Amino acid sequence: MNLWKQMTRKPDVQAALNADHLLTRSLTTRDLIALGIGAVIGTGIFILPGTVAATTSGPAITIAFILAAIVCSLAAMCYAEFASALPVAGSAYAYGNLVFGQVFGWIIGWALILEYMLAVAAVSTSFSAYFASLLQGFHITLPAAIAGPFSPSHGTYVNLIAVIVVLIIGVMLSRGMQSSMAINRLMVLVKLVIIAIFIVVGFFYVQPANWHPYLPFGAKGVLAGAAMVFFAYLGFDAVSASAPEVKNPQHTLPRGIIGTLVIATILYVLVAIVLTGIVPFTKLDVADP
Image (cartoon, rainbow, N blue to C red; front, side, top):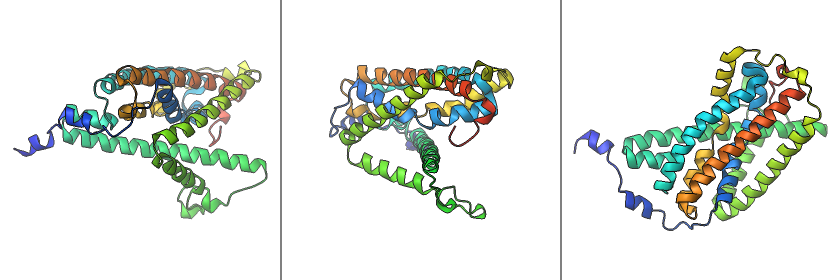
């Protein structure tokens, strides 16, 4: 067997399906949507709308979110199709491995690891920024040395809060899907309540004048913003990684993936509308908009 054939060798599909037989199928559509929302709605809704509006799109950030959602929906349908046909662990890594061969699965697998490292870093640091803002409300300021990125020349060495958050989530996940899903559902509920309060209460403080000009950076800014907020949708693919633990995956997985994307898009657009209506977009380029 030559090198190329070895690199593109495909594992047996039935063996891959049987490899996950020890995992319990306990997740429902509701669980998957909760898992997806927990993965998707994070930095994308608490940081990106402000940053991208201030630097790239202006109030038209709402259009950027919709454009990104359309592109993501095409990818989501592909994930849903793969996940229902091949309900195996591994998400895109497993699909690439089974369909194209091991070398492509290896490349996709490393891309996924880099993607999740970036997402985890962004979410944990944004949590740290909001936590520091909360402490400042009680006149408590964290030492700069443990509250920023590694930059000795600026006197910062580690973002301790971000590290602690990652470790806590890691411990939670290691306790199994049932335990982590129970905590995840609670966290998602709290997150949705906070977002709902912000939208409802913030609506009464919207000043339409803040939406003018609506396209300060032109159509080019909207397209550039869509490319940036695409990052906000990272996570819906994580739903497909839970395929071996899903009841009736052929029906449940597509509903979970598409449902996650629809709910996330609606929330993103509403938050962006209210956020840019309350505060002039030029003032939103901060760590905790």
